[in-house]
Length: 451
Image (cartoon, rainbow, N blue to C red; front, side, top):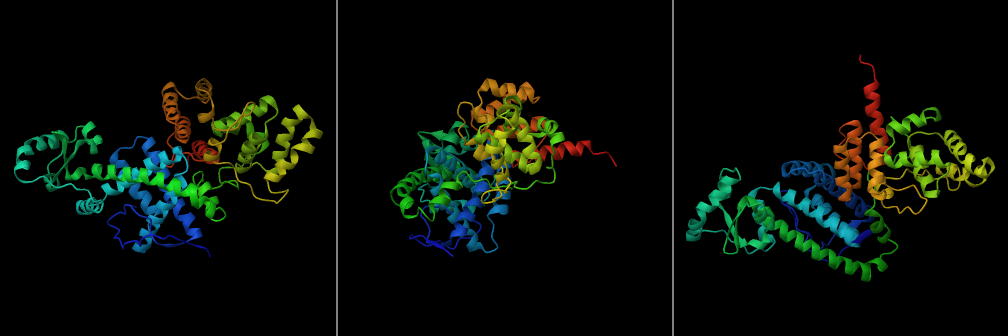
């Protein structure tokens, strides 16, 4: 059983009533399987936070979401082990997300959001302890200075619709540029270059420091990764690190699920009613051209396997289409093997799994290819037309296009699902076969006779 060791300081015995600042890497022994599992659990939290932010959830909704996510994925019956998991998973994901600018930007945004809402859930004394741990040289405004601004501070509190509890009587004087979010939203009194920040708004002070520290740390981690770690750990850690950023964390859909059991006779009807846009597009192009290139065949073929199309039906389905273009004999020689291979009947007989959204989004279709994610790879004109054919209203289409412009492709697919079928789960759409199962569940429940 492999163990990973860090050479830095030891982890303090923290209470669950506080949160670590991740200022220095810990000195821990971590089993290799825990190294990956801890990171995946934290990644589930971060991805759900990213989706919540993209959906425009407010602070209270995000507080509730983070609390629920943390309990579901990061809790441990032993408080010290929970802290270890927290710190270990953070530093593992630093390695994962330090490697490109796009990855760094996503991790910085979501990890900062996680810290913000965990901080908001602490009591005031715990928050003040974290301010002290950060070494922030902010002192409470007292005496004559407090009296001179007391009325102005009261006006700010009243303008926000807040009653002044005891915590509001504690205010900190800080350079205004350190709390740009509070200044922009007029939630502080600014005087002679300083902002007077109420104790209940400590979160803005601390989050600014946290984000700044993490941003610099990611740059340093990247340098360390490129200079030493990637070569030294190329056989042990590098494969894990390089795959975690694109990991799919849900069911693999290698076997058909409760609502997935289709046959040749109903495939056209089901494709129209329940296929996500990526698979509908591939299915339609196959029917139109009687051919798909290799990656398109893999993307659609494994999806069909996951929704319950049996091997004999799959062979009949692909044969009927390809024979019109290349002939039955060439199909048997050049294409039938790969279909049987996908079903684990040839080669190493592996049980291949359908592609998840992340893999599809990250693909790079070329000229003549039809695979990939329509929300990422279609032109705006083609995507609008495709959404129209799915029956989306103009308002729903605009909502989808807004998410596409901000590169929230899975959320765009989720909004499409909701426009067609109604509300989906908070987790959103993360897999084409999930889209199919959820749609079938809804359609069959509507068709079920009343008892």
